[in-house]
Image (cartoon, rainbow, N blue to C red; front, side, top):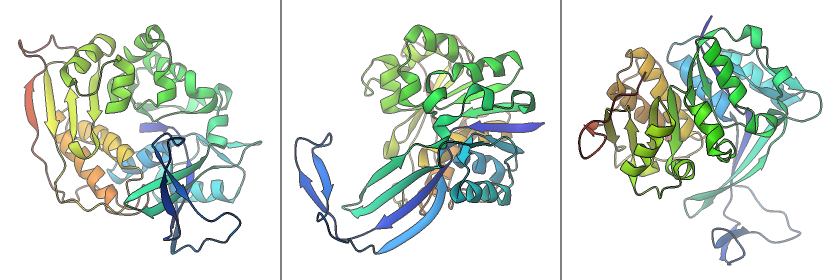
Length: 338
């Protein structure tokens, strides 16, 4: 029996830094700016680093670091990168026996291009993780207390409800961090799924997509989420902190203002899995869970790669102040937290 089984991508990340790139402004780019280099030439790289990433493995390592028995359920390719990920997970005390090896696709890869005015561009190859199908999941071996479902792609992109339904039928708690693909499902479908979720983790863009409400209107967003989800709802806001609803109160916290930021890769995964770890360790104390989540996210930011900086159990960390207020102006909402 596991404490937690995680779902999501497993990725081989390659970080490169170079001063040979230029930023140009052009309306043809979605952001209005593009990164360019000379066509047909060799571009010198100043630094290169290899690591592993992906929401499924990143979160699994947090749970292992915090002393939980955890396994990752996902897919890699039958290649060197896939084998390296499996070996790394084993070395980090994450069970790898639920991992499927794709016969047709290589392991997911990301190339993180850094060094341009404190910003980055990521080239993403979505390979084996997107090939995981229902029949590839060893359902009889999913014996655990919690599922942590990170963003999914490929076949499971719009079939993640089957994992949630399995959990519901087998008395397994669910923490869900859906991607835009999952949030694009019809709202009637999402309501049925989210009603079975115990902890819902969103960033402010995702919260806005789910509710159709501008992310600046936080109380309106949580009022709408309360109608959709019966569990604890979390909305992260990057450097501006986080807002959490347990159905009675809103909890707010912001990270330390002078925190060191070496790399932002995996910070969201670190926060989400840190919150669930703290929630389990404290028997449901939202304030403690928020503090551990914030600390784990800040620690992740201090190292390059998604796993290098993650906190270990009992490691001392900076505790942020958590502000607590009724979730509506007129008074506490009717409690709907489990």
